[in-house]
Image 1 (cartoon, rainbow, N blue to C red):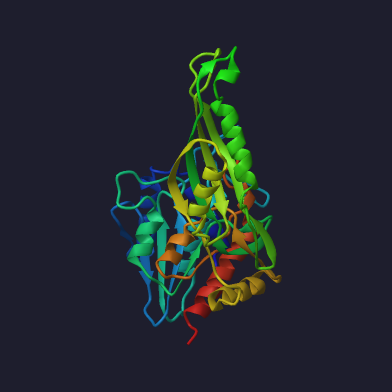
Image 2 (image 1 turned 90 degrees about the vertical axis):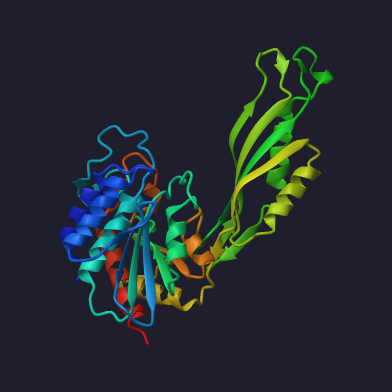
Length: 371
């Protein structure tokens, strides 16, 4: 039985611990010591992830949530207040992803009687990357350490207290493009080639080229291409720039690995002289709608909320992809409010978070007891 008061208190305490990405030691120690105080035997790895294993049996299930947050931006008051106003718990990371962390901590204290192995992974560096390490994300270490039969990543999937389940995520590609023009005096632009103008031509071409739309779980899912950075190299206002650097964030349909070669071909076909860099590409993934684990979780959520949850593909990249790549079917479902992520005044809704946590508890017992 979920202890509502204890869950709320734990979430408040987590919010009040600053845990900017790359600085998770304090919150990690809090989680470690809290689990120890309840008689558990957590472990910590070389990058600061906290793990806990419970039970034995034929089946194994992993729960994962990240401990880090983005920096506070735009807050008028204390971003770490943990203040309760009506049905809201307010503070940086309340939804992304400390509501999920608190749920995992509450579940191991509340759920009994399952026949299988339950693995908890509280991970670092979801919001940034690890520097000088073997892998760039804490969840990659967890995915390598454990190959469970299923995984739930407790990223926020509540929408004003209404549940959704993500059975995958879009891919993400970062393109770093250096567009070449020809520098000249700005009074004689016809004697050169403006790299900024060439960049606009390239961007327009890319937006019209091979952006696909798919359909998953009965919903339309588009690819998107966004210009997230642009800078020209001219050092004076009377010089037509000969170079322009463009950074593109390209969100692809899940599993579309051939897009790397296609985007390179599209750039070549634009006729714009461009040097292409792709420092990051993660192709995303999706689970078929009839995946047994997905259907079982859907039923657990329906029983807790008395309504059918929305099935969807996460628009952003999710750490669940790393577990999926290592052979573990991974689902994103968690108690935070999705549309509160990275917003000033971030909050989690208490009622939705409690129902979500209960539904995960119901799923754990059914999944780990199913013969």
